Amino acid sequence: MKIIIMGCGRVGARFASLMDEEGHEVTVLDNDTYSFRRLPPSFGGTALFGNGIDEEALKRAGIEEADIFVALTQGDNRNVMSCQIAKHIFNVPRVMCRIYDPLREEMYSALGMETISPTKVFAQLLKEKIEKVEAKAED
Amino acid sequence: MYIIVVGGGRLGYYLLKALLNEGHEVLVLEKDARICKTITDELGSVCFRGDGCEAATLAEVGTGRADMLVAVTGDDEDNLVSCQVAKHKHNVPRTIARLRNPQNAALFKKLGVDVTISTTDIILEAIEREVPTHPATQLLTIDEKGLVIVDVKISSESTTVGKAVKELSLPKESKLALIIPHEGSAHVPAANTVLKAGDQIIAVTSPETKEALQAALRGI
Image (cartoon, rainbow over all chains, first blue to last red):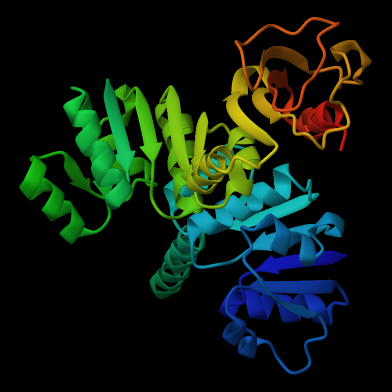
């Protein structure tokens, strides 16, 4: 599958190398080439300099043939905008968006976007871990 | 009208002043505390410190009863999200977004932003109007109908000089509205009207056929 990842931060770089190892065709897009240092030397995909909310840059990354688009920059709004470009202009079959702000995440999820809020997921995870420890202590 | 302006930069500031002068109820949302204080010190409590993209902030300032939200921050993505939150969470009837990248206009319209304004496009239109050698000028855009009104100048090099209007192969979507000759008064073109060098033709057309119309009228 052809996967485009916007944002080569810690998550973006790690996710890119995971998908690359699985044999997918991966392109990572970032507007700071220094971010590409996070990619492992074994990375066999493409690292491309460009702004993910610019249609031209997305085209250069091959968005017209992409099966999956994932937005993982630090900015919620940038992620939201690039995902909407991928979904509504380029009709990418699967578009995934990271949105830190849970309220914004709920709204865009209601609008039909596939969204993940790390804030919500991590808080929930912590809660579950602590509850597990407490349950064990009670036994 | 209750108007919310997102972004207290220079554009937001002057917009706020102008709208207050017109007697509207206006509130600026600005993230930066310093900018917010400057505005409040000068104009009173018309600036609220907060993120205009957050539904909670917008709820706090009563966006539910706002007639209009204008997003004029320097970032297209922030303006888009602000308008979308206003529209979908608070049912604001009109949203206006400022664009940095003129290419985003189509996307914003598709995503429900009512009006987009691109400074790049406005300056470009002004240049076209100012440069007399430019053969075609876009005078007006009628968004609802998908039409534009253009002004095409016929020069002495145009191969259509001396031809009648009915001999021109104009695109289907276009209509000639008026001919303003170099000398004499303006007249409505008929099928037999002959084009002369120096004529200025005002026509209605779709944005897609603008180039074709210009080519048909000038023959170059």
